[in-house]
Length: 189
Length: 281
Image (cartoon, rainbow over all chains, first blue to last red; front, side, top):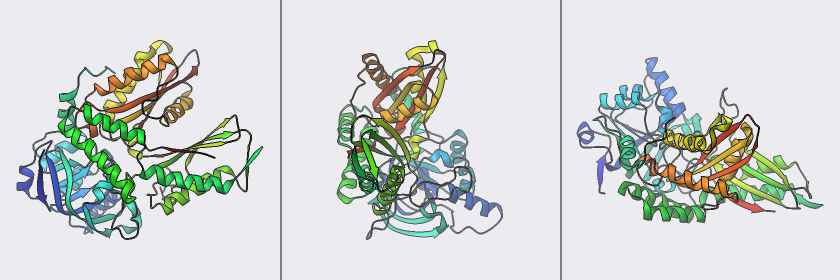
């Protein structure tokens, strides 16, 4: 399966060309944010304050890396569970975020918001933080340094691999994939 | 009475923390390689390849397998003829966690108060430490850096006493199905059946220290384990839940006698890297 190379920030045209199950390789800038950073960003936005990061067209990567050993820019840096960020995601999309990288599925409200805002949700392979480390070339903490591993970092990435799970057309890879490979009816609750 | 210095325990735990977070256990790697041969989904195979490549990079470049280096779960089997000198055993274990997570450049993920300020302790302590008194004069230490993604998918339920093995099968399948990609499949699944609520969950967790393929010594339980593995893999969840035939690498079941009114069932899930490491002092 060939990967589609995508330069960041994301354009509407690039999003148009992506469908569930596509493999992508992102090059450019990703911003990291987890639970605490999302909460702060949205609190700032709701109070009408300027955000420390311009979110328009950006891709947010849900990651809390390990500390780097000396000589490295970052440690192990794989995705965290996306569903935890579901309560914040529709607002982040309103604020201009166009792409998200995490792991696992999204709830119906988020899926709808992704379609509505013409955005894209990808997974990186969970538990491959050592492999993903190689695609991260530069790291700079840009906001909320006090949050430690949860601070917002600007990552310069090169051919960062991901898989499209929710596209701008309302598709969901996890549902489609499960239906394709399920060999027996699920046990009734 | 054999004497063991507390400092020896600290050093052992620190070493286990670093090794468990960097080196994929051989049995787990073998099972993942096996799954690569049987996986039906081409995307699933690619994901398995990335998991294997990740293990190689982690090992060679001393990068943790995963950024979530977990809650430090420590299982101590303490021989009754051992006397610990020079400190309290629990302090020694926590000192080892602090040292391992500090020196090993591991992520500190523990917050001091669960619903209050949630301030990071900065040391990944305290660990969750289980102790068992056993015959003999040795200490067996099992170390499991337990990731949040899979731990959050744990479930417990009390069934009617007559609900039987079918209830267990349904409950485990339902748990795995609902968990989707959150616990990072292909999974290793621990199941505790019987005892009381806390006993069932402790058994589910403890079973995850087994090696892949190690069946229960109880023939009836061993058959249930195989049935569960087949049932879970029929769900189609697949690697990272993108769809596929490998949802789990193994299912372990531990049982314990229980009350006439009860059938407690607990499920505790491990991600594909199923990180554990043991040592004996």
